[in-house]
Image (cartoon, rainbow, N blue to C red; front, side):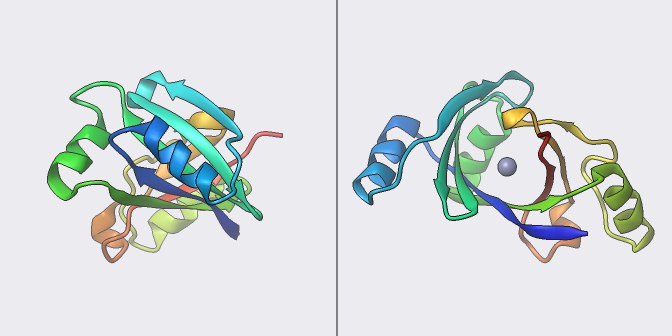
Length: 133
Ligand code: ZN
């Protein structure tokens, strides 16, 4: 089952400027990494049990570049933490929810991730995230 909110993904144009903003609020940067498969640079800023995940496009055809072009900077997705991600996806699919990823893929932090289709989620892009310990 879903356990908690794992992170909140925020699309930004300038990840360094965004990191500075969160540092000014007193939060600390945990790590920055590039996820080649999704053409994004990702920065994690923990707050309590949740992380803010800043996402900057590394290419014009990155999904994040397209998102910013259409909607501007802002909240991009909500990620729920789960165990047994493949089982969750199979189960959710039987309930008629559309999936973007039927099979988990690798995200930042070496986590397995999968997105649900916004058409099935009332407008919010939802990610399920299984952290590998
Ligand atoms: Zn995410």
